[in-house]
Amino acid sequence: MDRIAKANESYQRAVFGGDPSVLAEAERSLDVVEADLALARGRILHARFLDDRVEDPRELPLFQRAAELYRQLGDARGEAEALFWVGCVHQVIRQDEESAAQAFARARELATGVGDRLTLSYVLRHLAFAEQAAGRFDVARQRMEESTRLRRDIGFQPGVAANLVGLAFLAIGDGRREDARALVEEAAATAEASGAHGVLRWVAEARAALPPPA
Figure 1 (tube, rainbow, N blue to C red):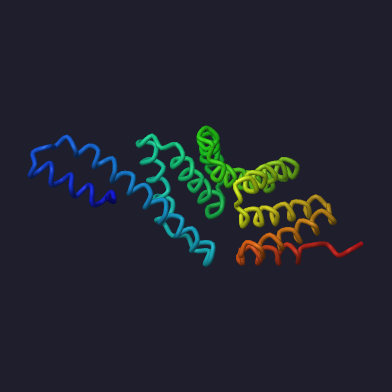
Figure 2: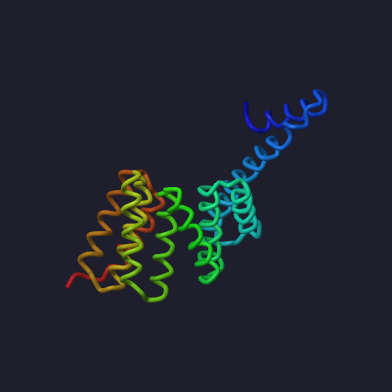
């Protein structure tokens, strides 16, 4: 029985069956539904932003609500994921690295604690972007490489391809022309093999940014 149907049954048991003891669990179950829905809806709005670059004012509150509900539920994995997205809004949409760093730090702590390698890979990827923006290319590369290792371990190939593009741009910034070229080609092959057609657009951008052969 799904959570909504179970909550409706709890209402019947409380009102007509005289058993209000079921209401607390019903409320908790609905909090899970609300948290999952807020997180999912927020991700959809973020995908729309990546397409049209127009912020939807609902996005950040949705992720914040999800994080708070997961915290109240004691769901560290859910809270870590929601906090990553809070940080992502601050970093990617609002260009507020200070607020992003706070959310990412807590998300990293929680994801590490529960062994959530996927969320941790996302956090490390975006920490790499922050280091890159600050001109700390060595640290940025370490973060991106760590994220890539995690993604390889869990078989998240589209994410591996995306990270290889990030590593290629870091190599370009470092003046490592041949490394950059090899990373672009690996990213292209990985994206093709995994059907990550969106990543192929980023591959094309990285390829266009490659310095000409010596």
